[in-house]
Amino acid sequence: MKEIRTDAAPAPVGPYSQALAHDGLLFLSGQIPLDPATGALVDGEIEAQTRQVLANLSAVLEAAGSSLRQVLRTTVYLVDLSLFPRVNAVYAEHFSTTPSPARVTVEAAALPMGAQVEIDAIASI
Image (cartoon, rainbow, N blue to C red; front, side, top):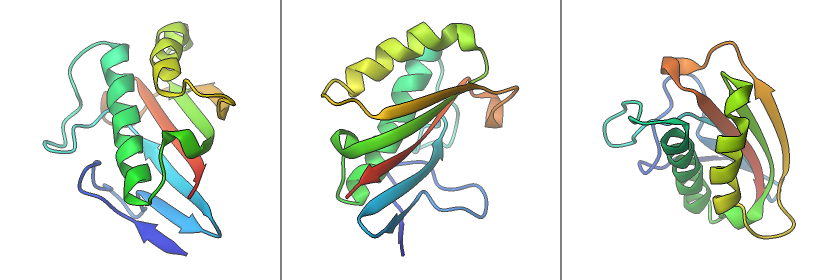
């Protein structure tokens, strides 16, 4: 097992890794829309937050020698499921190849730091 860490994504704020690589798979912790340079939540609507989350995931994937094209499965957590169509539109911009990753979407009562969206992933390396 190998820990993946990059300064291009927000640093963990607890006892967890940005990602772990094991037997050709990459397990990415959930990312919220934090600007890695400031550690602050990005301003803007759900689209801006979703873009930042996907940029953070992409940075971790790249640090491991992978990419969004190699994502096998994601879990999307939303504080308001009515935002799903807007999140889905941004998600589709980033996962435009086929087959698309398998996905689960869950409504959560709250997310860290007041984020509206969090996404985790499993990818191949």
